[in-house]
Image (cartoon, rainbow, N blue to C red):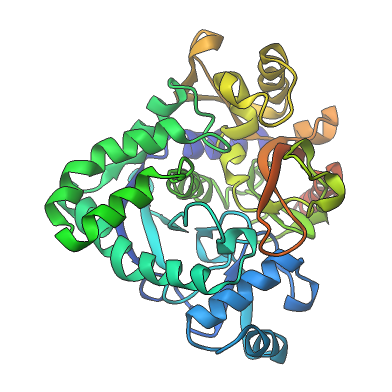
Amino acid sequence: MIQQANTEALARLRSASPRLIDIQPAGAVLKDFDRHTLLHAGPPIAYSNMCAPMKEAVHAVLMYENLAASREEAAALAQSGSIRFLPCHERGVVGPMTGVTSYSMPLLVVRNETHGNLAFSTINEGAGDVIRFGACTPNTIRRLKWIEEVLAPVLRDAVHLLGGLDLSAIMSQALSMGDELHMRNIAASMVLLHRLAAPLAQVCPPEHLNDVMKFLTTRNDQFFLNFAMAANKSAADAASGVEYSTLVTTIARNGVEVGIRVSGMPGRWFTAPAPLVEGLYFSGYSQEDANPDLGDSAIMEVGGFGGFAMAASPAIVRLIGIPDTDEAQAFTQLMRNITMGEHPSYTIPNQNFAGLPLGIDLMKVVETGIEPGLNTAIVSKEPGVGMIGAGLSRVPFEAFAKAIIAFDSMIQERLS
């Protein structure tokens, strides 16, 4: 019963074919979503319990949406109960770091061509004072407006001119070029730009072309991450809802808690306290300065990338505090002990083209005690400071223990 269900869920995950088809405002494509609804990364959380970077991102976005004129007004509005806060994942969205997403924000629209479902992500803001790291400055809001009014329309027109973009092809190529597609996306971003350059030159108004190309090519090596996140979300959502399956379809962190969801128990969150990230801190910072783990980007590991694909990315090893490439190879092998199989299309060249470890199995995590590893940025606990390092986070066993108890209870109820 469980084995058959897992075979089906894994097949859905493997067979996904994500394609970027459009870029549209969140309010135009998300169901049950209005100007007084904000999405955030991770499992459900009230505004009062949010970490400081997420609260500050909320303030910035309320000003961006012209719902507040100042940080103080935004904080009062957020506390008033007039704003509805929901996890990104519960609307088909994935958001990096704070993940705060609002009505006017343009979203990448990705369709899983195999199963027909849609998934979404915001457009990466680039470097500097950005909401994903909890910034709330005039420049933060100006950049969001520029993305909405200038960048998104020309990207949309370029994508339409191409007839869409096969994201799986870009992701597969990037793996062979040294990306693990969580903390390293430079190859994928370059391949994406290669595909978009000619149509962008064709559709972009001349007065904006320099700014658009500068944004895409300057301090923006992680630009493709949001595309990859939406691609993996479209695959994971297709694998959700398989009765009796123990495949993990969601791992997400809100800076306070980590939450997981399981295919056979759709819609239910199982949480544990978010850990501090072990890794390499930038000069002048230490773990004392860090916020606990944050962001929806762990959807990359759900799809076999990131920490699970570390063997494919020797260049990332030192950045996240791993001592050598042998340990990176060993870590990818370790993750194979808690997965159901391999991906047939996403392969690791320096592991003789073995497929990525795919399909985190709740039962295997509980049986082995091996916690899934996530490559991740480390963000300061002080809002607006931004990224202060990078490292390897482990999804706490506690979340899986709660999930297996609930799964067992569900089985017992259905058999009684």
